[in-house]
Length: 406
Ligand SMILES: Cc1ncc(COP(=O)(O)O)c(C=O)c1O
Image 1: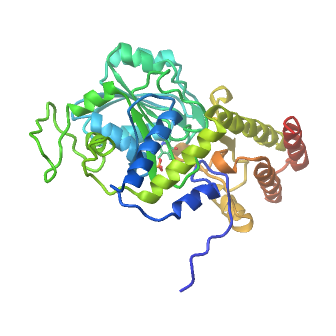
Image 2: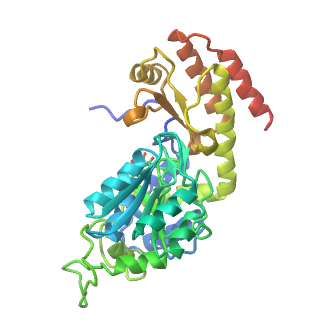
């Protein structure tokens, strides 16, 4: 049988994206035992790096083994018990994911909704908090399905003042912009791996504060077989075992109470990815994403394409464009991938077949990649017979943008 051979790609989707070779290299190190003092040192260092990445002093900053939705599910299933009210604003697909997770946890969902492509004023969300008085607010920061950024800087404090717990899906925005968790007074925040942090999916950094910790610990149940003292749950216990944050607290603290077997290679990847991100600087990284997004968006407009959604609230790590009339979404994307090794994404639900999503995320976001993408994408699109496209003007626009930096 032949060895696995992976062809070269330029991934321009909202994740997964290319990985820095230094991350891949770190992953090829020898496996360590999960209680090996060297590995414990790496775990402790990784927790500190996660704290720095979220700009928080939260002790409880550790990774969940699993993709980002495992992080979201860990937070939701640990805090939401049957009958708890949860407010979930919806601006796209991932608001529905929260809705799904809360429903499965037995919570009572209260949705407020905006038309696709728009976001909420924070005052609208705060008014809903006052009306519904939920136990938890679960909100998506960067809604990748529509490319919109939901402002949340006032939401954490508003929740705190009302005794409500705030839970944030920052999967797509994490390490692509500054998310000061403590300054924004957010209770629990879930980041992402395979997006702006640019490491392989399968591990999810999260952080939560003492307020949140107290709430979940009222539902704590230590599993049979490793219990040492009497554990009496004050509230119905957390139903999930694998995603039980209270047991994970015991694992990711000096107690080191055995839970799952930590994925050594994922921790190597996370540790290295975070060091690279923090070395670049969170602010500088945010500026890099925004700089390339501005240039590419201007170039796509110059090409003759229409940008989708309310631009005032766009994410800097995803550009959404309307698919030109007469072009078949899936056929075009497949051709771009097969002939040129370039991948872009479609969208979901009502937006499927209507918009393309171009990811500007992490390691691959640099001048040569963006220029290559634009050149190939423009010409391939023109080849499909789309009228009035101006590939040369698009390229000139992007080159001029980069000239401002050179
Ligand atoms: C905003 C948002 N939340 C959650 C997820 C789910 O992440 P994962 O696929 O890593 O489980 C995604 C993935 O695209 C996302 O963009």
